[in-house]
Length: 454
Image (cartoon, rainbow, N blue to C red):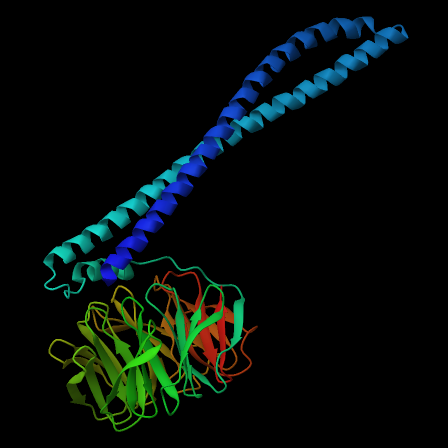
């Protein structure tokens, strides 16, 4: 039923786009016709202009004596001036017609692209519908299509200033995260709340009051209808945005849950805790699938978009790369951050790199194909002020975004500082996230503030 609803929504959107396109084409063609008629009239005037110019030469020669001759010459001169203006308008109208036809072609091309995407999605849905048993088969091919769009590199736009400054939480805001398509963003904080916002308007969409202690971390599932969040109260909750209720509650950790990440290709969550365990949860089967121990508390986790690789950052400054399929260690970077907490790890969209943020005030970029540190980012203006301070990569991996003490810093991929944003937060910045379409980013702070930059 959910798939058919999506198909109907796409059909309505497609029909609306076609209607708007046709209206635009009709309008442009009408204008082009009117302008064409004007151009013909202008050409007639131009011919008259040439005839009058020849005639004016004779008149001007005879207009040197007598008031009548002078008045005639002035009238002809004025008429010639008007004709020259008409000729200039003719040239402008030709350019306008050319521009209108260019816009018409551009709109038509975009409409063709939209139709192609729509038809692909519709074909996937129809194929899934035919394969479904009792109407319960999930849309695996559609998910694959969505995932391929998420992994494609997108050019990032560098925001210039705050678009919205929002008092999001009564206590510190501990995390911020966009959904996978940038349609909403969620925050959580020390007031035990999870809130969902519209990044286009800055308005609150919904809130959840299910936790009994501060909420430390959160993430969206693939299509953005569920939020998974972890708390100091040692629970993980799966929050349903459609019903506005908590769908599941997982217990199993014996200490604070510091970080979690959802798997995009399955209904699973990876969580890291101060209890020195890392757990894999299945929220369809409502159970813990795997548990592994590690000698140091886990403060940050992230999963690659293919769901095959997990990266964790620990209290002792060690970074670990895991295979999710075998849930075994692939490689350890021991003492990567001089024995200081790794407060965040962020895997790039293409899964080629992971960015680490340490309490030693250094950010490091690691090539996951070679397992080498390829760049370090540090500046006198940056101080990492929290064990869960999340830094992030831009959508094209060309920039690094991190919050410091009342500042937000943007590094270029060569390690140099590009921009320092000081007109925004008045206290410690505790989290950042870059919108998946690359057009904006969001930051949160210790006063509970949320800023959406654009």
